[in-house]
Image (spheres, rainbow, N blue to C red):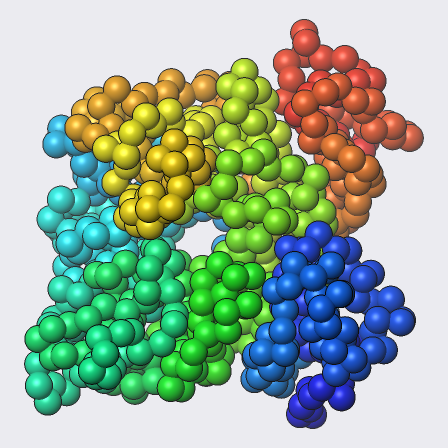
Length: 627
């Protein structure tokens, strides 16, 4: 493939044509509230970067458009990042390759809060086994288990101490093997969570790495103290504060992008990659069907760990992120792991890839690339200009526009994951509205879209029950290390009421409370209960059955029929089977979409006695089939 370099003499159009440049500029436009045509119109597209940089960095326009945030250093960093990617994604529009994981519906289990079998207030593997019939009857095809490995639980299992042991609170290896056999015996599959960007600081490798002359020293990122007792660079942690921890025993600083007990592995060390590959193969040899790969796009860091650009840090929320969110050897390391572990087992991979836009996602999931089968992209979870740790009302019109863009442009060689919730996010229905009286309708509307759009649905535990956010009243109820770090940092400069309100809006704790069928809750969550909504559970069962029976919702063509404000109407067509999905994204009634010919109502979120043929109620959705 032809290589090219972008410079200040390149045009905006050439920058936007580069996959990294495209996604970076798209994110800037999103944050500034500007449409794509701001860049793609001929006048701007033909501007040289030098001209744009001079304009933007000039006092007047810089202040007007960007609030004074963008200087020449931003453009220098952008060009350096863009020139690291020479490939362009292939975007075919041909036939989709059938795969079991494209047809499956996944269900994410957060073991600690899913089902407690022994009354100690902690979910466990035996509890999961006891609910397999429930999951099978729901219509689930595959389970994703959040980490069950041995861990000190600084970040609820995402800080792994031993990859080959089961956390004692959850059970034993024998319990896991029985769970795996029971899952496979029901015709379902099971994937695990692979957390290999970092380990716990209690992992044997890290404990050895702190010793003088240790062969494990280069398993992590250590930097000798400079005598001033300050971190080696300005990178910040996702859990607040600097991304470095001082280790007094060896007078060095160690990198941790997440908590102070989650130490980043150095994937540039071949021994690290060999150890990770061997561990993955051990689990796949046991019969595991694949892995969800935690923050897998962070595994390659730029050599030397240079200073982060302050403007990019402010834009993306974390200083230094441009040096690792799409690192220089990411593709090499993903292909290596695929070739040496996943491919020989025919195993499935889905990567958590925060920060990657559509073009970059195409470069890691394109079938011809042999890197990942699928990714979790998170840009649809927040309305542009907002972040998770913010108290605001989510706009479903943005969700519609985002989905249309990906449905139409992601390509037939790539495949989307469809989700609203997971263990790292508050419940979507509460983000849309706090009005609990609308939550049942909203849950059913979201389910209709999730199970009829093109992609693989991932249900998070409790979605099918219509669970919403919880009414936490104090920080004593919050165990989430991210939220506690946010509180400690912001309480120094903001009123306590404001800080807690922000945490209440965005904390991961909402998704981690014990499910309603558990009798005993941890002391910090005492009294926090919600009743499952039978109407939502019934909707999930019907919709999962419909998706399983109708391949049009999996492999069928996608066409938008109406995308006006608060409207999302689309068709799915496979052969002679044609379906129309008519969604009201707003809380007020609207006119139902008018169809010519004969159509049969297949599903409606509203009961027959409450239904009006020509009108959709607030948050109502209908599925119709042409006859």
